[in-house]
Length: 302
Length: 279
Image (spheres, each protein chain N blue to C red):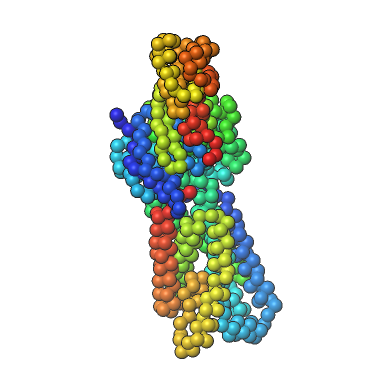
């Protein structure tokens, strides 16, 4: 498999704490990788390491299979923390600066990009008069200049209205589909992330605690009957022999997840009770990315 | 590097701060001419000589003692346009906005993440600011010349004027490069627009006093010593070189001071920019 990004034992230490703790991350070419974590978990720091804004304490980064990062970073488009824009200049002038930085000869790319992000009507307006959402769009336009192969976007839909979020979502999906651009994206709006990404990584206290595909997420989050028992006893035997249920899994703390006969909750309950398996709770359950994420990181603020 | 320079010049000529600084330079040059006019009208030569002696005797680092004279013409006033600290204040403010402002607005991140080496990013900022500083000097110089001719007349051109003018411009441009380099280095280290303005203005305004005080203390502790720290402060060297009466020692000291300030500032700025993360 060809990778856009591979990190090996990547570490970034700030005085007194690990911001990134031995992270081994792989993002395949063409992936839209959703990066999830609480505030201060290390998302932005990792993105800053990838884009060269911060230097790793140890470990290595490979971009497109190469460790010649200054060369490979020319293939990156980044928007990290906030759109880096000149407030005293218009959107056109901002794009013009970055067109020159990238040495792009075609002047028409400026208008092209403004149109791509839906700002062509306000291209002459000074950026300081823009709303946060408009700045985000312009930041994305700057990141897209030069047709990068790999986009690193930190919270790109922050401050966007619902139609703006939808536009950015469609734009990113189109870029990935039509131009095979790899996208490394973080967001706190997990519902939105789950509509875009095909792979996910969860970071907690600087450690990458889980990576999974969209299919795996669907599998982990699919609808089920969650049965909490007093003791496991012979519950599994009852499920299989008396009820004919084979599609289930066992979670810690005497909990079962049954993925079939979801409409027969009361009958399953009665059968288990009759065979001396005390049921503490039985409920129809089904998670989304947000629920799964909350489970993984251990709920709200610890 | 050439792409970065093109982008920097685009930003420079779109920068409101640059044009405001140019206007301030024009304003200050005009005020300077009319101040001389007033001096010439209000004071007799004897009074001005007494003032000159009084200030020179105070031991303070007084720039441009030639300001108290009466035979003002464009030719005699031209060197005086390099005295005072207006230019230093303006370039301090401009550098803080132009260099440190990039950190404040986050644009530095967008540039630094595009694969350019840190040294080339710093060098492009350094060169652009140096050229902006020299443009400011040129604006001030031209304004002074125009208004001096209007107010006082052109004046008699002495022998060897062209060579002296060349020496004056050469040494002043090198020294001003040193000043702008110093402020670029400070902006790169501090990375905060407000902080940079405060520090650079503080340096321009108070460092000469501190250095003069240090000279007095050294003179008290070591009466035999001829060491004068303040004479190596670049603004003081600029004032010393604001003359047509160049000696080779003065010229050499001016050029070496300018070059050393430029080199050390570049080194410090480049190392600081390379070593630290960009937030």
